[in-house]
Length: 323
Image (tube, rainbow, N blue to C red; front, top):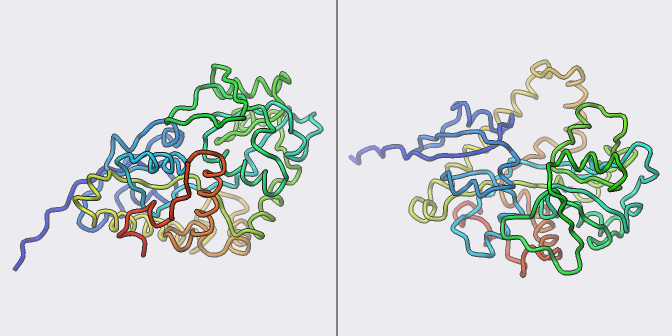
């Protein structure tokens, strides 16, 4: 009789989302693993190589594509903890005449980092759906890019040192005409009457995009140290299973009874979500996300994040491709 395997300690950093809560509070434990899961600030997964401090961690997907091409010691799992309706993150002044991305051509647009994954998505969408090329905006950022990213030739990016909230003031002062941000602006949370979304009916704009493409843009993946994967490849499979189980519990909780949530309109929200996006728009796995991933990888190549188009199968741990 074989002795029982001692559970392997594995550290994980991930955002505190409802779909990962069961991992963070220990309700879901991967088989054969003692998971030490910790939540981190979501922007940290885009601004620092947090995977260097944990066995596995959430990571900006565009940054991972660059890290993979450079041969850094990290490998992704087909797990996608963050997706965003990217159309909703473009803002202008309330008194602005701009209602279409083409209206901002030739104008200054502020953003946290040119390289942000949300920008990869938006620049690709703006090019395909609205005829706007990346070089047609004058980009203003509050800090250098980092992550080894070099601004592509022909793109104008000016660094105005400061915080992201300073970009909001530049918008209000008329020094920039638009704002693209990976997090909702502080002024938006304050319901500042001087700010509005670029698209007059942003929700309809995004739903139209989803119905045409089937894409709910993925912005983050989960990665693990390549050394751990090479030594203990089964850990990758168990982590994938655990993320899927945590998400299943989250959805089951919501759909069991809308009264579980504190949104006054939860009943209508859940019904609308299923009607538009289907039963599980956050599905993990390579096959379920093939079109979305192919689109982002193509955008990253077109925007000079990566010099070649990798096969999707080469981006993820080989033993997780079937999951």
